[in-house]
Image 1 (tube, rainbow, N blue to C red):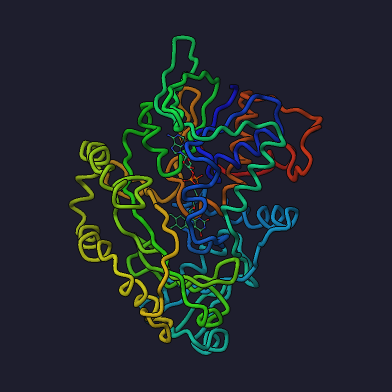
Image 2 (image 1 turned 180 degrees about the vertical axis):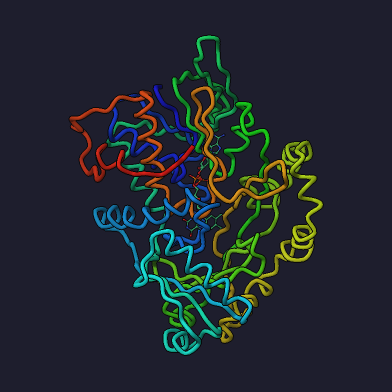
Length: 441
Ligand SMILES: Cc1cc2nc3c(=O)[nH]c(=O)nc-3n(C[C@H](O)[C@H](O)[C@H](O)COP(=O)(O)OP(=O)(O)OC[C@H]3O[C@@H](n4cnc5c(N)ncnc54)[C@H](O)[C@@H]3O)c2cc1C
């Protein structure tokens, strides 16, 4: 292979899409599951997030990519004729003390490219007119926010990848990496169907392993200064009678500013159904959705984190410890729904009978014991590691993958073909791809 991508999530597949669309190089995507988008890429809130919640300094890459991603997903969805529901979003404040946080979000939103027509600060009366069933004292309405099905989008991109000549290789688990004296990268792979081991060579390797990417980076002796914590986020499906309770998805100002992923939202999905979620329950591994996998992940996870100084520093952070002991470990449905009930008083926890899916967040922590806010991209010995690829990763994935492709072209790792003879359905050619200006690494 000229380029091997580990991971058939939305990131790996988007990279496969752009690289194979402009190059004749041999590109392969290795995925351990039977299909693409099996993990986080199909287990999320499904929002194309407007970038007003992202600090333009500390979350620069994600903020810019989220802004650019909106138009790209819209164009792609229109051509593929799949839902891109421009339904807007509300971020509400329950207390006076939170209004200055809304004002900060407004400032960030404008700095990140949103206009005053798209981002509007509402007072209590405006809010009541817009959403009579919501109880809050102020809010931000953003019209440039949409609902999609990222699993479906990943499958469409994967079909395009195949058309462009990219190889999608399923049921193969990447296990080990070695670099020989000629700087050739050799990777060991296990076939999950029969347990056979195989050894492959590649000129360039891309680690797009999602929640597992930090473990893959460690195998390549990269990113040792970081470790991941894993949080399972569950969703609960609202009964049909609540489907018209609001016109918009509703988020609330985070109670714990440093841990914004803790507060569940009221979500309207692209198919019109409503859900509450996600919460954040600490688990031990990137795929620990169930108890058995969680128990199996305890040992490798602990051995990974206890050797990291950042972990011990995090353990001295009182806020974090209080959260882990009091907030995160309470997995009760009622507690999660009651958080949303604070701003949507008419909902009843007992009416939520069915669980939706669960997804796993995997924030990275550095040596100082701080959570990284942006994605972290490291290139080392012809291996590109895309780490900390958390929310809004799906929103920004097309511009990020395009910008990475431009970087790979500029380094001479692939050569660009100009004829595009097999690329029926290609939306963005190399002139558009190289235009995308995101500072990545
Ligand atoms: C609860 C939750 C809600 C979210 N909501 C949103 C949202 O509304 N909007 C948004 O923009 N973002 C959201 N996100 C973030 C977004 O879903 C992710 O950023 C994105 O899906 C990450 O894609 P990925 O391809 O990196 O990871 P994944 O989808 O996890 O793909 C990684 C792939 O690598 C494969 N892999 C891993 N290790 C190996 C190995 N050793 N060998 C072979 N294959 C391997 C896995 O099987 C997997 O398929 C949310 C995330 C969570 C957890």
